[in-house]
Length: 335
Image (cartoon, one colour):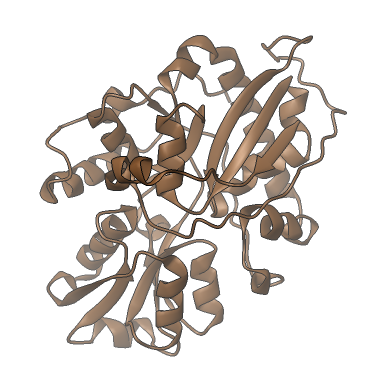
């Protein structure tokens, strides 16, 4: 079965210990419970058929969480003889603390996170890429051409995070590095509201918040997919990979079925789940286009190398990791 619960309440001490590996966001978390339908039991399941294996998973409140949550709702984890408990986080700080204290087996994250984890000696590994798109969106009514012609381009972001990385990549790709005015706004709802009011030229946001900005009248300046960047990843603890590898493989088989369900199903069928469980804005109903997803695949090396350059330039790490140092694709199903 799948259980979805609220993010954990953390002490101030833990908060400070993980501050450097966090991206900022609201700590409020939506709550919901998936249903199961075990009508199609995988014939290739390697987990025990008599005793369910339990996994605690942390996902972020964005589009990358959709196939995980729907895999649970449709009973695909249970078909693999797994009991998966999913915690939906709006704060990367809370997610990181839960993972570092051993309360989570695996998490949705970004490539900066695994570098911080490796520097801290946690022994975790990237096991796959995850879905998602970070988009730079202009203020309402400001077209891309007019924005790019501006003498100064103010962009709302969170400093030293994947959002910052994407913003710098966008400025370099579009030729406005010298005119980029970074405005640090850690709270994404505040960033979106300032964009709506015209207090920013643009803001860099994950989906689905980027779509909310588009509905308000903004224009896509660029996004990670257009730039060929894929910083979203999934991380499992070293202990889980060493001692529970069959469950991780089964987890990904169920995830891939979740991807297939998303691609084959009209979003209206499950949109309320996205609102209730993941925290999608209800105003996106009938206006959000769910992207076509792909089965779990290894993390992107080009993106990782770009992230390492960014982190080195910002003095966020002194390490020089290769993707192979921090990842494994040994647990992904063969296609």
